[in-house]
Image 1 (cartoon, rainbow, N blue to C red):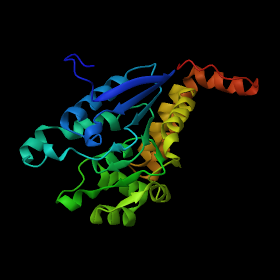
Image 2 (image 1 turned 180 degrees about the vertical axis):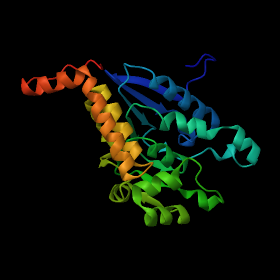
Image 3 (image 1 turned 90 degrees about the vertical axis):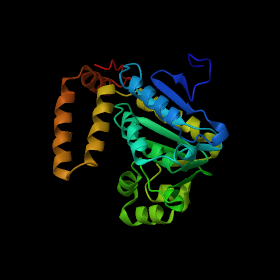
Image 4 (image 1 turned 135 degrees about the vertical axis):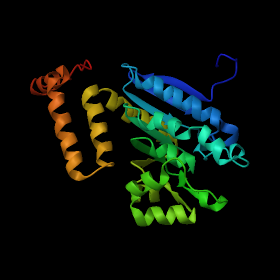
Length: 262
């Protein structure tokens, strides 16, 4: 419950040490993104970004929908000025700039803003019955949460153009084939698999995980040379960490490493 006594639009759980599970909680509208949900989600991601005890974040919806897109009631009469004043880019940015690895556990629909939300994650685990797409063009809109950029980087120009310009949806298997999904599992195994992967990530050295994420994201924003320079700098920095020494010693001594995050 929030301070007003109303149930939160985003439910938080701690299923295992270092892992936070966020569940979108608007089931009556298939977890559609209204402004209140966007703001709550952004505030949570901003807070989790600073917590040293959080090492991986899983975001999910429910069995029927990860997120069916934006709540169109927020948009039908909106003016350009109103859209600007909502600062949606800042709300999306809180997720995109989160230094913790993010896993999207997708059941059911991930459409429009829901597909864009999934693409803000670093890993996408999808159920066999999941459906992905950017249908904005069918209602006279275009994506506004990064799909023209992230989908193109994930799937390439020609597939991205097909999906964006036709608004057609694709299955989880098709999404995996074009590089949009990390893995496809039975519907009832989506969340368990996402949490298993998250637990594995949470067990790794936090600095190494953070620098790997930064380097991979850097590869999407510039040239190969710039990305390689970024990787080299990160590789050099990590040699100042105690976890590096602990990890190597543990491997040589054939034991499990005890990472401290330092």
